[in-house]
Length: 117
Image 1 (tube, rainbow, N blue to C red):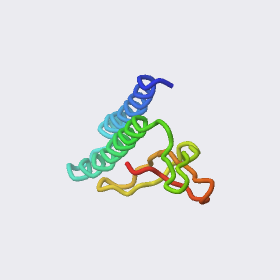
Image 2 (image 1 turned 30 degrees about the horizontal axis):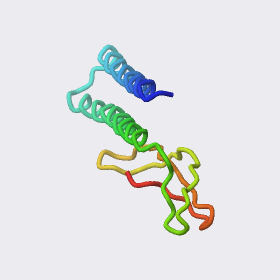
Image 3 (image 1 turned 45 degrees about the horizontal axis):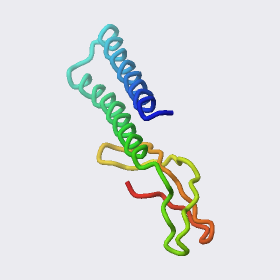
Image 4 (image 1 turned 180 degrees about the vertical axis):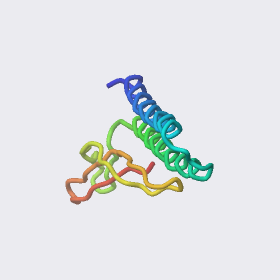
């Protein structure tokens, strides 16, 4: 997948979530008579969905920029083996997000490694 294709995929995922949130706003306004504080509470929850997806997408774009040869092990100077993207949950100031980061394995030491980022 090209970088442009990848960006478009992330854009479409975010726009899909934004569309779902907007539809919930319309549905709630048609069916429910909520107070302003109740509306604010719902919008806060929906805002988190959008914020989470934006953060996840941004991290994925940053990871794509880092693709290339694996890190070189300090012991022996061999390139570590790329094992694919692994998903992790990270706690941010905006709450928990899921990120996929490259995972490398050092065969000699029997240890895994996630590059910082």
